[in-house]
Image (cartoon, rainbow, N blue to C red; front, top):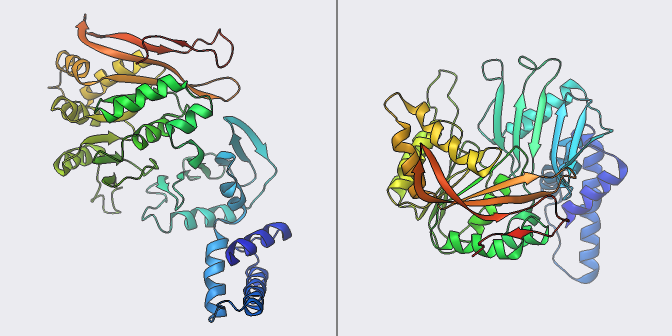
Length: 385
């Protein structure tokens, strides 16, 4: 309660605790004493250690400086900086530039604070970094060594309001009948792939699908950087690791998939398939372990095609004639997400492999299709359920 009052006062007064620490400390102390005065008048417990409380409150509200109000805003989905004086945000899938300026030193200090608890670094030897912030947001940084001008910073938030299939249905991402079908598929142990372009809502939908079955399945998730905001009574989340300065200690997605299979999963989840780990996923699915994953693609059919090609990166002895039938028999549904011109994210199509492969291509049947030529919300459903 005290921390929230301090945060509101600092925001109202335009005080950045990372810049004007004395003013922030004065506000925090005033609010702590105000709390004690009110508690004394009501005969309630008081804060005995005022100085210690002030320290804890400042740690809670200092956050990430001028960016903290953007991170606190529940309507903002993403924040990115093309340097300290070019700040952009996205609301409802629509991007806009905002009037916020920093110095290079302030930007570097913010990034260092963001990375402080992650165990990851960014420097000349490692000019890119992916990390998870304490609230679950994903941070990506590219420094000036590889970016013209200043640093480029992206913070992708995963908002609580979109973490269930029911919530996505209310937002118009899919009709209720399709949500019911997808929930049933997950609970019955079907393997589901979520595809789409960048910012199409793949990770959000995957998290909502997992939420629908996390109460009854042991789920092992594998990600390069923690993004899936899923919790459950029997869930283990694994994250990759960068190599050390000496070039050792790296943990790849391929290694994590193999380790996950030793952990008795009811469902194996790969946050994003983009490289040779596709082979390990296909092999896992082919042994009967239900799976779920996301993949970048322009359509559901292209997602299957990509999953048939990516395993070839694992080595010369991998043949498509093995991969395609393995995928056709182990993938149950491919759900393709898209972002409309107005920023709305929705499920555009769902297909199901029939198990057949003709001329090297996986045969599928349509399950659901959203027709853009129809009025918004008027969806054409095909064999749903």
